[in-house]
Length: 323
Ligand code: NAP
Ligand code: GDP
Image (cartoon, rainbow, N blue to C red):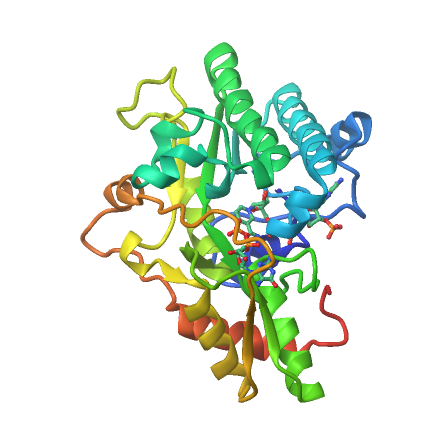
């Protein structure tokens, strides 16, 4: 079963599950079950009786939503995670793969080098997203506690900034790529400049949702919390899923890719009165590469192609897209 089955990553998993897969997948959205309510969660999971769960459901948003709605991001995510893991345990679900994010790492660690799985709790997160970050950190703690106390195989993946078809393209609440695709699309139609929030200087690693979907299935089938790390630490059951640090790009480069994919020739203006968020949060993907193997390494979709496919999807699905 996939919680958050109607979202960006859930839709990518649906896309992949149309291909040949070993298992049968059930995709749940908030219409099937409100995961903030424990009784509904338990009832729904009992009905589906999954052998394993990929837990994606969450209150999600970009920098500006995280800054504006800290209490909502904290409470909703704590509730959802508490209910999903507890119900899974109660019903004897053997494996749960839950989703964290590289934006929850200690701010100080992002300034001094690359972040890795051992550092998750080694200092406070960036102030802009502390509600979301602390809720997500507790999901790692909860998964680890279930492993230690009950022997459950509950693990967490840590993706970087994700984008792709079926994203949320809301102008104020979305992450940078979908928000700017929507803004650029409207600026082209209206013949006005594209206004980008912040300086364009911050650096980010981006992962295409369909790449992440393949890696989630790989994680479900191949990644357990027994890979040489001390089982009592956060590193043991956590895995960063990311492109290489060398593939980190600036927001200004992202803007260029979006403008090219949309065919946008008007001016581009950087509104430096708006927040930049973290200057960088370079994620070290060495653990993933070691476990995935070097013989036939995972081929990540280039940012150029991923943005082209996302723009194409947005333009073709403009009426129905989340925005
Ligand atoms: P998304 O597109 O916003 O989708 C969120 C999903 O959660 C939807 O299917 C939504 O269902 C479901 N959901 C929300 N509240 C719910 C509730 N109360 N009960 C049941 N379902 C509920 O999110 P996403 O971008 O795919 O993110 C997937 C996971 O990756 C999340 O855990 C997120 O924290 C993590 N992540 C995301 C990013 C990113 O850049 N997007 C980066 C790192 C990590 P409805 O459609 O019915 O509302
Ligand atoms: P983050 O990667 O967790 O910080 O989240 P985002 O995906 O929201 O990316 C935020 C970065 O993109 C910041 O440097 C913003 O200043 C920049 N940015 C530029 N324009 C936009 C926009 O329209 N929306 C968002 N969310 N960020 C933007």
